[in-house]
Image (tube, rainbow, N blue to C red; front, side, top):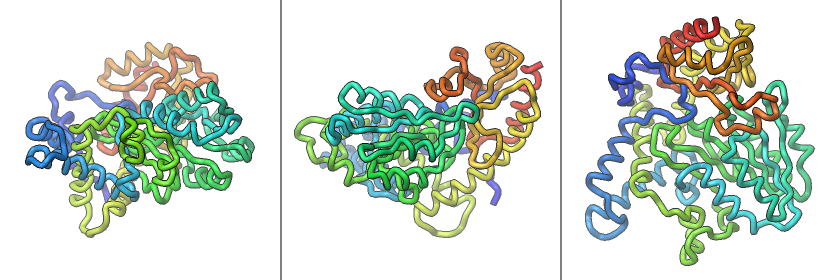
Length: 409
């Protein structure tokens, strides 16, 4: 099955925006374009249902129903219970709350392992627990490849290990870690696994039952929707956490780790992402299957298209002697998030040339400071990052390659 890219792009208003005409978008890891189904629901909520939800009058009832729909349908797609889905302001804020909620579960002198491949969102708050009696061990990346070694993790685990935090995919290394295998190792040690899926989920939502993570998080504004952070937390685990909300919310799992309270409109519009997925599935497939199975089919569809675009880009980059690719330069288990370091020209000069050629990319450290430190990459300036998704065109990849050839001269 080949993706109908014309149909896909019709679902994103940005691609018909005159001001963006001719520009190729390669900073998707910083935030995707929103789909029209999400935008329609958000505007409808603000226009018709912007009242306190769950009261017995029509506008309020509808508001509550829309919010519940987002919890229920997201849970179906991710193959978990809706009680285990939580929407917070951002992944960074969610981890901060989790670190405070979980601290009382552990004794002074207990240990946690935090990877050095993570975005700081899944790192800083855990590391600060060292100031509160917890021993923090670092799981370093390989200096040359940026990869994490399971053997290295096993050497860090002990009878006092209580938690391990690591990414499904780094936002600068761009490699999909073997989450299921890592989580099994962590479980065998009697510890909790906390997985940052922010850089992975845009390429296909996970089947969380299959992955086996105790906590899994990603950002909805990077998956075609609102600026919210989604948390999956295993129900038996949240029951052990310390309430972070008002005292009268004790025992109400949906409130205990979202102290800011729900953003009604944005939560209500989350199901718009799933409306988009359902429309894409219906356009490409005929079988009537469960949301979890639809998710798997769409992930395969998206991955195939992304790999078809990533392959010629990696071929080009491997042919150059004036670029260093940060992380693996082979297609296997590679996300279409590629960080570059020019070797013979100033990074800012190369970046500015790419921008002049209507290429929208990112530069800097992208809050992935620790992997760059481990790999001895100077910051500033950091790296140039290319990132794309299933709505990207082959012609845009060709525009990018041509742009790199010009910028590197």
